Length: 134
Image (cartoon, rainbow, N blue to C red; front, side):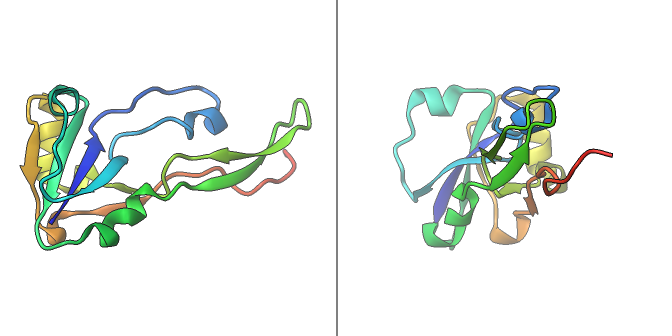
């Protein structure tokens, strides 16, 4: 079994879409650990996070949730080009799982067990490819 520490709320937001994508969001997996990981009290009592235990799934299968998504961008006001981090390429779709959806509104559950079939995955939002403004 593996255990996932998952954000239940958006950490922050910014009106600039490029900056907004760099913040941790609801459904992002903070870390994937082996079964029996000794979570700290801070991790277990933070109402913005939940530990999701997934029986029968090795850590190697869910490491994909820790992959960072990188995208290029152009600041049209300054012409600056660069690469930004959209934090995670994949996330849990909390709204597709009634248990996680309910937990996300309460903030009082520390650990929940979900089967692999319950885990809904979605790609994170990314900025469109760099192109000139209309």
